[in-house]
Image (cartoon, rainbow, N blue to C red; front, side, top):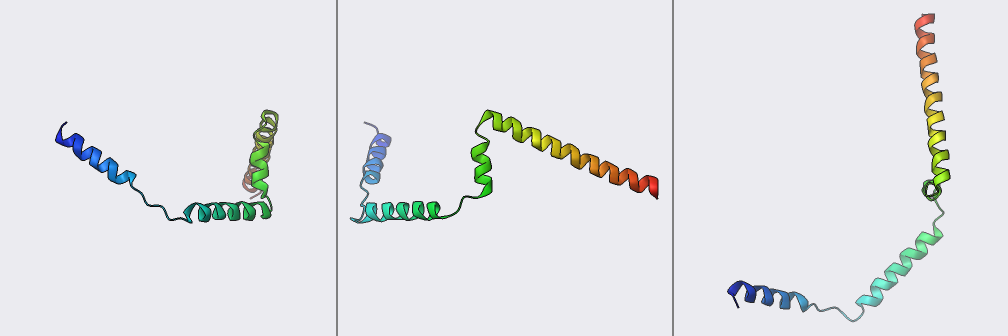
Length: 89
């Protein structure tokens, strides 16, 4: 066996000897449970509803169509504003 193989095996053996305190797992799980309870108690935000809705293909089509219509309305409003300012003044 080469020297590099021995060094690697020694390093691997040292890394495998991790000491975990007795209450570590229960402390981690208590933190996970606490976070889950806090998340469940927090009211759902509207963007999370939008994300859940966007998982459905038909809802995606509706959302894209609504965004396109809104974009065209905004473009028309800006065009009207600019042309009205130029023509009127």
